[in-house]
Image (cartoon, helix red, strand yellow):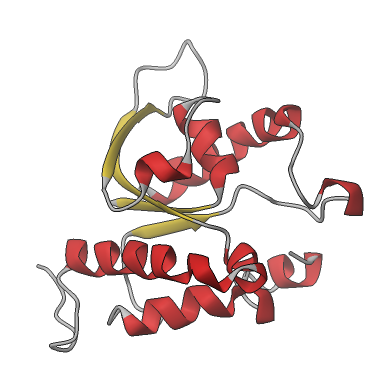
Length: 168
C-alpha cells in the first residue's frame, strides 16, 4: 500500500485490491462512498520493506495494534471487516486463523479507554474476516472465500441481489 494512497484516504485502491471490489459488487453492496457503519483494515499503515512482504514480523503487528484501537475508537463501527491474518491475530490473539473465521460473523468487545485511569469505554462490534486482496491476485482459488465474506457483510446490512435497502 503506497503512501500516496493513504494520503488520498484510499488504502484499498489499486489493481491489487480489485478482487475485494469485485466481490463487494457481486455481493450487492453499495459503493464504498455510502454511509455504512463498517471499518475495513489490513493493519498495515506503511510500506513494508520488500523482505517483509510475505509475512509481517509479530512485533510489527503488536506495534500496530494501538493504531487499530484508535481507529475503532474514532469510527465506532458496527462491523469490522478484516483483510488478512495480521489484524485478526492482533485483535483475537496469536493463535487466530483466517480458516477459523471463514463463513461466520464473530463478536469482539474492546475497552477503548485512552488510559488505564480513564473510565471504561466498551465497544462491541461484529467481525468478518477474509484474505488480503493481493493474496487473491496471487491465488484466484481464494476468491470464493472473499465473496463469502462480502456476502456475509451484505446479509448483515440487508443488501443483496434484490437491490439496496438501508436498515433504519
